[in-house]
Amino acid sequence: MLDAVVVGAGPNGLTAAVELARRGFSVAVFEARDSVGGGARTEELTLPGFRHDPCSAAHPLGINSPAFRALPLERYGLEWLQPELPMAHPFTDGTAAVLSRSVAETAASFGARDAGPYRRLVEPFLPKWDTLARDFMSLPLTALPRDPVTLARFGLVGMPPSTWLMRRFRDERAKALFSGLVAHVMAPLSGFATGAIGLVFALAAHARGWPVARGGSQSISDALAAYLKDLGGTVHTDYEVKRLDDLPPARAYVFDTSPTALARIAGLGSYYDGYRYGPGVFKVDYALDGPVPWTAPEARVAGTVQIGASSAEIGTALRAASREGRAPDKPFMITVQPGVVDPDRAPEGKQVFWAYGHVPSGWDGDLTDALERQLERFAPGFRDRVLARATAGPPELAARNANYVGGDIGAGAVTGLQILLRPKLSLSPYGTPHPAVFICSSATPPGPGVHGMSGHNAAKAVWRRLRQQQA
Image (cartoon, rainbow, N blue to C red; front, side, top):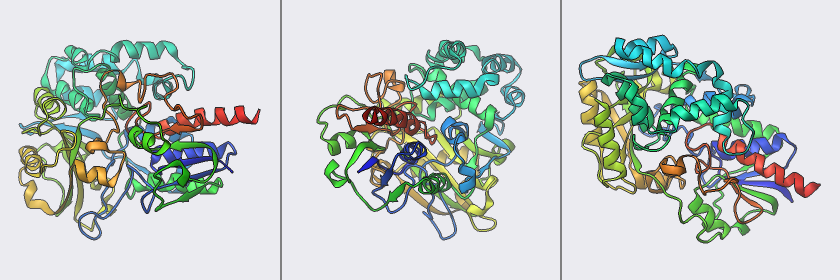
């Protein structure tokens, strides 16, 4: 009998398996698709030689993850590549605000009136970032805080809505960039704890940047899988699990799946019926005949580029997708251009480009034209560079990855108490009513992102149970 079986070979499932194998437990992973990866894959979606990331592409939380930093993933091929600028937020006048590794450079891009307030916001937390990140990403009670005072100060600043936090800024440049940071998790700007979301992304960039993985996000998953195999674990692909009886006998079963799928497979009935999924996304992967023709010079060297002319425009787009049930006319966009630092992702002189906007859950329309109209505002002539497109709305995204219910790439709405207390109101969010069944997906704390911390935290709950059984 195995000690643990993990269902789903995304970053969280693989991290959970690695953490258990490192502690001497026998582990096997079962994945429905023909390769590992989940939300961290790389595929030729458009033309031969153009290697795209179907979901995640830039990884501020990955390089800052306490779980990943504790593993020897570099020995297994993972290499972080840092663009000249982690992120740029261009405006229609041809200028841009930036999120730089340098706090001073970032503050200066906001203008004189907001430079000081921004520095006063981030500088108290930056020297203690590693401890703060560990404490924040280990919540709830999987570990005692190492620095409860700093965590409490962070909570006082971040728990109110981001609209409150942004009152300290006077001009639109800072407000728009910070609004965009919050929108990365598709949260309404006025929601509980959204200030913390924006602040985490900013601090992560200042601490270690927003890198891409050389060769694509698949290298993260491949490194985890290779390390797991060296530890004695096994990975089985093309293995769809429909019920627990499909799996070999084990002392624990760990699911890197949506709560909905877990309830169906493990026979948990209505246990997760109250779990809410968020809006979906419409994503386009582009093969380009050269770099994006951004008007703002800063955007040309940034790995990630946010698209939203103002905080009001961003807020309107989020409300349309999450509350009004319609696709926004001017969608807020997150775009990534890996070629600024990893030119081998496309044939010489060409580029891969990654972009998405928010849409209602399950929306089956085509947002391509609206996205490209937005891009043309900030990069005139963009359409002329397009060689090929691969589009995916909520139905296609959910078909590719069953965790993306309704096209929700965050595996659950990041609103209300569900920002922190997910998938249930519980001090043991990784456990279920079945004593041998656990959940480790992005539906559990600390939530969305390629960071492995949900898997790391869940593994702690699993090995505690396994050790209790041995005692």
